[in-house]
Image 1: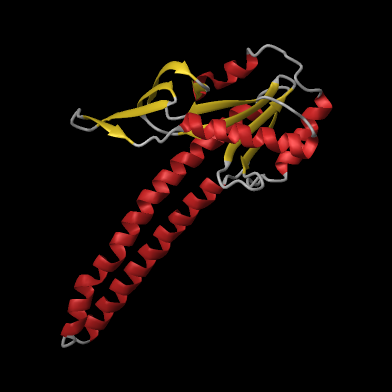
Image 2: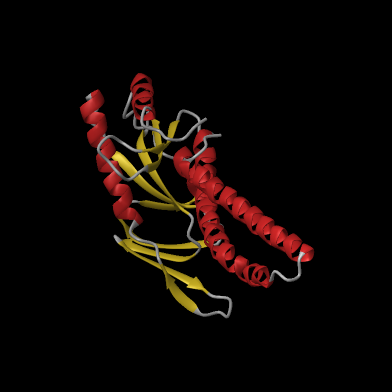
Length: 238
């Protein structure tokens, strides 16, 4: 399975949590031993008391970031697994095209067309109409509040345009690139009206591709050429 940069980032924060926890325990242990040897070292009592306040905030921040990146990585990995199971499709993950800053989570290519998929791991009620998005979450006490979601449809459409230009310039292939926003969290509920891109839950992703009509938009040779060229700009590792 491909290793995404998001997974690498999650692992980085996990390692930082381990390192700072070890440093905290080492400092506390060293100070404790010094105090045991010489009870007159009152200044060490003071240091020992406040040492955790230096390390613990870092550990908390790293933990929160690890949870966020880990959840995102899990969603991307699950989508990649679904795409890899599709017959007749070639998949490239975690792509940053030349001249672009934003990454494309997944590119799927077959004789049925070219697709860019943006993976989202939000939970709660997602309302999407046109290019307007709203995320509603329910707190522990049942209070409903708004969450941050940005504008995934505009994001995926921008990526689709960038990929279309890339294929035209590099391969001379003029193609319509389909945009898909895929939600992966089991606790995500979707309300979609007047969509400008396909918005789908991961549980329906495989059947969506399987039921696409054969359009023969590309030959099998063109499909392979597209994959090879796009794969040059993939940051995921096998």
